Length: 430
Image 1: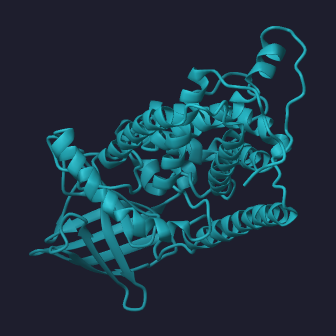
Image 2: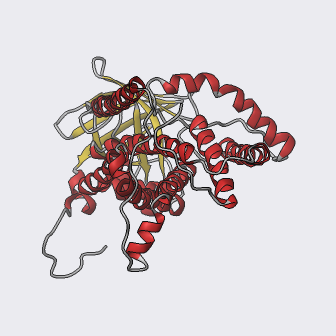
Image 3: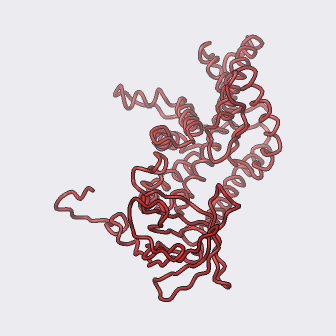
């Protein structure tokens, strides 16, 4: 696969060693974390990754001597023990591969062609990843507005990640800002002439994501760190130009952005065709995916039955009306229904808990149970005497229960009603 643009400048040994390591490491990372960068790659990934689960478990037990066996693999968290073992495994393979490559290849003066094609692969990997995250922010799926349950949780009970999610989810405008920034990174990296700008923007945007992940304990640390590393690698080609311009007040020469072309025309045409098919596929299916998700569980998703935030007015158990005492661990205080099949209860003691919550609107029945206990269930019937009222009756174990609710107006929360003010005579910080 000879190209028409040779480069005869020899590289220093240290530069060749660094390139060999990262060439192997980045390709291995993409192999183990494809992130949907190619059509149907996730299905292929699901097939070939299974043997590595067993390998990681074996490494954890016999080489790292972990106190607990590896039984959890990549899920909503990308920072599992398994993921960290795979990172170590990739680094080990990259070191060994670099040593073998260096021992075998003593004549090659530089790897300009391999460097070019590696940057192409990294450009598309990072671009497609950033586009995916960007679309989910612009459509506001990754960070939804705080739910009713979240609004009534004690502030100090939120996790660091929950705090970051609520901070991001509160502002639609900030979601647009960060989403457009990520989309801009993605689109700029897709094209050779805008790669440098895209890489610099990605370093800034992905660096901010990485900082949030580290500082708020968001379990996407490994991916965000790798995206920053890839952005830095893409900047390397122009590091001298950037240094001259920003640090040394020197003339920055124009960048060499000439593409590597094959001698045979049909190969170039095929490569260009594949490029635009991949770009089209990415944009179309990302948009299709987020629009479908928006209708299923996003802002446009249908609201569940009895959707709302309810305040308990009376709580009767076995004909005894329980007063609203803050020392009572049984009496309910509020109930939040934000998502289908789920409800959160806040008790008088200020503790909260989530429950499975199924509503039959035809039979006017409710079935509730703790997620940790699917055997013992509350069986209720319900009526709605008025628009903002709800009365449920039923039994739990051997106790009869009757609870009267009044719908609580969520706009009374300061976080919901405060909104944006262009003019603030004094800071309003509570």
